[in-house]
Amino acid sequence: MISPAALSQFNLFNGLPESLLNEIAAMSSEVSFKKGEFVFHEGETADKLHFLLNGSVALRVNLTSRPDSVTVSFISLPYQIFGWSGMVAPHHYTSSAVCDEDSNLLIILSAPFMKLLAQHPEHGFNVMVRIAEVISDRLRNSRQALLKTL
Image (cartoon, rainbow, N blue to C red; front, side, top):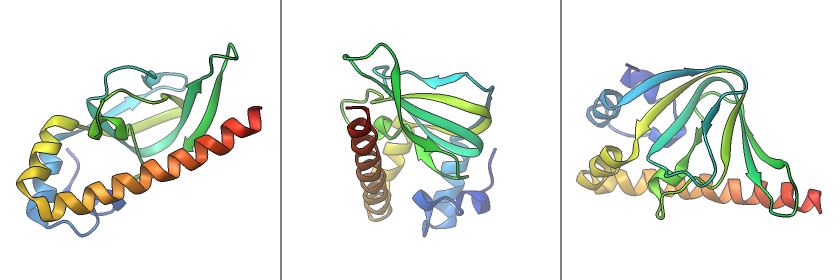
């Protein structure tokens, strides 16, 4: 289990009280993936949040006009979040995540996490604002990557 002190390093959890970090730590797990292994596939039901602890993960989208996928973002800095679709309806991953190298991830199930945030709306609001920032950043990256393929 990750420590609350380590969780406080994650931008998503910045400023949360230690009691809440303790609850988040209790619902999280650390998982290892090998290079080339998929964390999730585009279109699958999204029920988890993923955070990079170390390694590198490529986010790829399929294009109907091409047989191969396009990398729209790289997750390569510790504590970066991906798989935010688990927090936002309709809860389907909008890209595939594949490890570019052996990687260790922190995974949090979305449903209990959302329930916890609902119980603490003042902190939940701040977390969701940060999720919106991540979505905005990924949309911008995806748009730029897709425009380069045209």
